[in-house]
Amino acid sequence: MNTVTAIYLQRMRHAPIFRNITDEAWAAIEPLMQYRSFNAGEFLLRGGEPAIYSFWLMSGVCREYFITLEGTQHNKSFVFAGDIAGSLYDLNSGEPSTVSIEFLESSDGFLMDFRKFTTLRSQFPCWNVWHLQMAEALFMKKARREYELLTLNATQRYQQFLRQYPGVDLQVPLYHIASYLGMTPEALSRVRKKLSLI
Image (cartoon, rainbow, N blue to C red; front, side):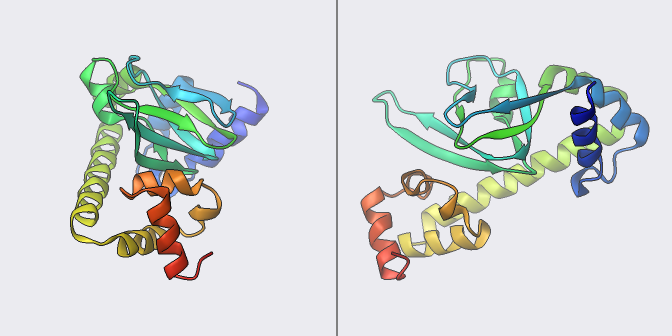
């Protein structure tokens, strides 16, 4: 392991989401972590491929999206530094992936083989508890997003998005944000004009 990788892993070790992981359990996961950097436009996963890896972002941002049979893209979520990219459904299904994951800017972090992590969870209860907490957080995020899409108007959805991700409109192209919010780029432009953001 080179010095840069060791420093990054040590920084991750002290992140709040790992506070309940024992030193022994952390030592067991370090060999599974592969440091990688990606350029904007590169993919962690393309729809139809087998989902193998999750990716802990140290920096950057990526989007997870679906593609319809007609070729239309619909953004499912954005993943920012400090979060984990990887479709839990696809990682568990063993079937060709339903989601694509594309980096929107230069990003770096750690790849981890999800099957190897599953084995580790059976050996260290704290990793199993951690995984269940992450899955619960994803469920809560998904439920909240469904509620907003079904009950809030376009302006309210955009305002809520900016509250949840302050400054993201400067980091992510607006047409991707529009897709995530379930509206056209033109509709988002009208919302932004109404809010005097353009």
